[in-house]
Image (cartoon, rainbow, N blue to C red):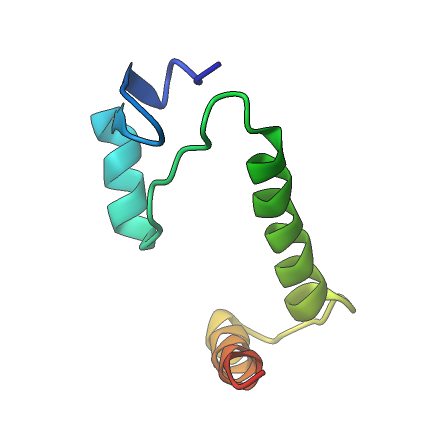
Length: 85
């Protein structure tokens, strides 16, 4: 079942017509809008596991920074290190 606030029209397979506001959010935060295929619950679990991995790789242990710039610099270095894996 599609979330009504995100999907306006459900087409075949993974094709969806997303709500304009959700599309703007994707463009702003630079993520691709990909819907799970109906009745394919395994897709959702894979997606959620990726978030768990990222949270573990980047935010455990919980670090403290003096300001946003210091955090952004650390995050950029961490992304570069993870991208080489």
